[in-house]
Image (cartoon, rainbow, N blue to C red):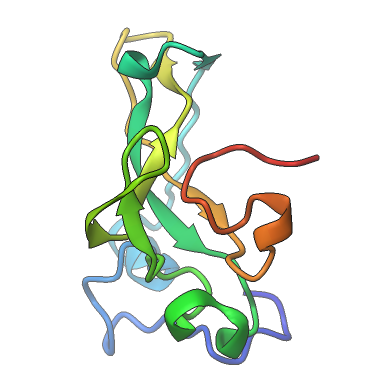
Length: 131
């Protein structure tokens, strides 16, 4: 991570099961290069939306909901497609889906929100950027 994010540590020995761990990925795949052609669909049809983990993007831990660190799963309640709270934490919705054009496979997705920016849709657990 760039300088200025002191509470974000990527250490394969300390956290080998982290969802995002560049050092361990480079050890496993030293020449990792992935090229993929994908199509992204944005839809109003909620039945086709994608259930996603929501990652905290606030770089100030004390301003994030639940004091979550940057690049960690959000500490907010999971929501349904209408934004109503559900059991569990960290799961939200992307209003659409992505497909690998070469294989036709629907792809897993995740997105980030800065929970401190509630006035800009940053705490609702649904991908809906304000700008």
